[in-house]
Length: 341
Image 1 (cartoon, helix red, strand yellow):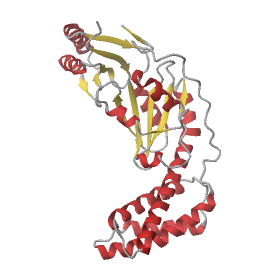
Image 2: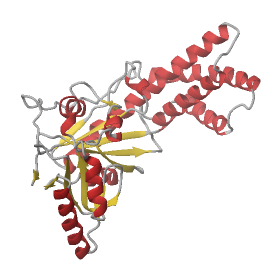
Image 3: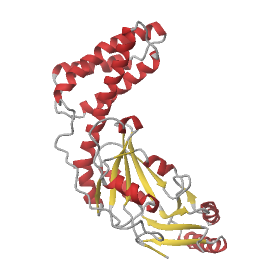
Image 4: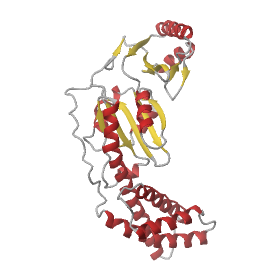
């Protein structure tokens, strides 16, 4: 008979002992961890600091006692905790990244919900893992850079333990567009995956976001033109907000050197727009109409100036890496690789 729940323990240099509960009776696992004085960290993740070894020993004794009482299987993994891997990646990337770990084995799981926003080609290592082995992925780490809007997912591939990193889309509208797709990567160690993230994933991600903002900006401009031709401007406030959002998104990617040094007319347009955008939006409907007419002219100029930089807005010099085929047969059940009882 299967246990009501499972708890997998990891040793982390940052967190001490990390516990991930899973299974249909995961609420009983939570109770056992609470009684053992584990601390709640990210959602579905419990930690036990190693600063007091006597406390650690008592906590583990208590955990195993209650695990036996509640019919909970406790196993120990000798793999590095995915949170430590995610923090290692974030620490070595440019900019400031927030790091959050999610338990993928809960029902419902916020982490699994976030992974549904993955932005990857159908044969990429991230989408391939989630498509065929979602049930065996125990946890994922999410890295978010507020300044750039980039969000990465880091997880371990169940069948060979390789580290997989891919991009997430902030909205499903991005994934539905006909744009270049960010290239997810996989490597057996932190150094290898960092190299691929820097050289392949992030450049392709930047191109995909620039294309998405560019095409959505064109869509908003078309909506404004159509409404203007009819002598009416429905959805004034939302159109204004959408236009500014995609202008700003495209602006940021252009300024980070996506297409090299900006032509002087484009640089002048962006600098002028930065000032106007910082002054805020219109306070009444009449002002919003005037503002939209202004941004219709400026947005049209922006589109005309950006398109010659790369006619197809394609991801140049970014080639998807060949990913190994998924192992044959159905996903394996039971313990994850590297876990022991």
